[in-house]
Image 1 (cartoon, rainbow, N blue to C red):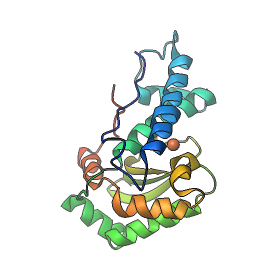
Image 2 (cartoon, protein in one colour):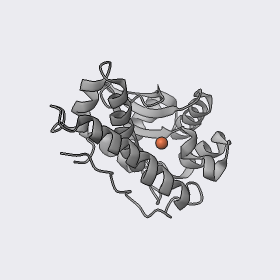
Image 3 (cartoon, rainbow, N blue to C red):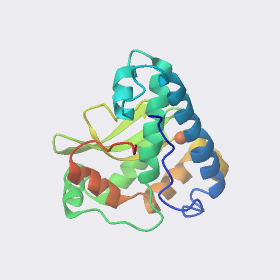
Length: 203
Ligand SMILES: [Fe+2]
């Protein structure tokens, strides 16, 4: 069963001007699609062809770097699209309590997420994640993922240049401030926390 490009959960104009339709046309329509196509090509005709994307990631980690990169990037991008919302969203009481406990306040968390994103060298991902009832900010480099890490990812922000270059050029802090300030999907984070298991890439 071939993996599919997850549809955007909003119109391609919905995140503008933070993330424009032009960026989404490349980032979702070209970059994400290419990761999906390459992962599908690599598993076609193998015993991984009928596995879930999460199972492919586990099988490929440390064994097939090319497949791992494309499978993990497919998963990360699917999760990233859902980590943003066009409308303002609200965190659950449970999530707010855990954020306050771990970071002091939601505003402090937002500041720390932006700082980690700005400080992340080169390409990668910045995550809000839960493990053992505790929240933390995690970073993964290049195509690496938290999908098979033992963490329950709640939100992710793509800090590859292709995520922001058309809209913000080299100004990664401007992209991070705008996304973190206005577009993060706190309802999605709350759902992930309440479910207690890692999000599954849509079949
Ligand atoms: Fe990306």
